[in-house]
Image (cartoon, rainbow, N blue to C red; front, side, top):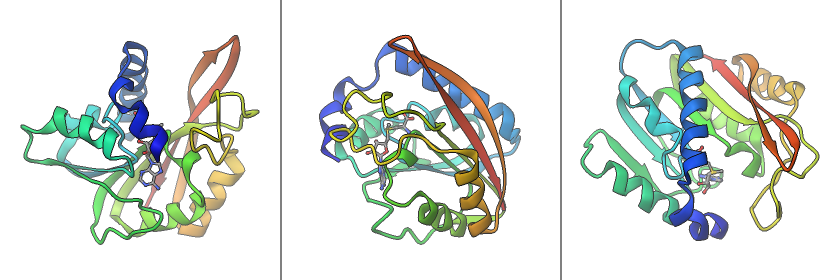
Length: 197
Ligand SMILES: C[S@@+](CC[C@H](N)C(=O)[O-])C[C@H]1O[C@@H](n2cnc3c(N)ncnc32)[C@H](O)[C@@H]1O
């Protein structure tokens, strides 16, 4: 996605570092995982969200379509043998691996088929595994200044949609609002959906 290649070098602003760090810490609290696990970060970007999971990581695999975002991710993790990145579009290509924990932050609204991706990710989850997705609740399309140019395919998601993905994938799901962002005086909720296999 060319938008992210252009944005990569300036992606890690002070605000984003703080916000994504807080979202990841809240997600970690809800997940309550105490042992080390194999983690897939789908749409890892520069790692602002996923690298916060390092304390519970046996391994972290970051997957992203944008080589620019992954260059930044790789620079941050070059001295960590248990962290790697893979530059693929997971909607088009399969990854034949299994994980204990799958995380994904602010990526699902870029997908053509979030329902099919949930099915695919569910098949990559080990039995007893968990998947945590953070994204926008349904919004009016004003969250991104230029949605089309930024590769936005969905203006957030409703709880009904998320429960539908879980049902189709045979997973249980718990959904909570974990954050409210204010932009141009408007408020946008972000959900955390934790799926259980
Ligand atoms: C808004 S960024 C979020 C990055 C990171 N998760 C975070 O929270 O800081 C969305 C990321 O998803 C990636 N992405 C979008 N569609 C994808 C796909 N089909 N397969 C892999 N990565 C994808 C983009 O390249 C981008 O880096």
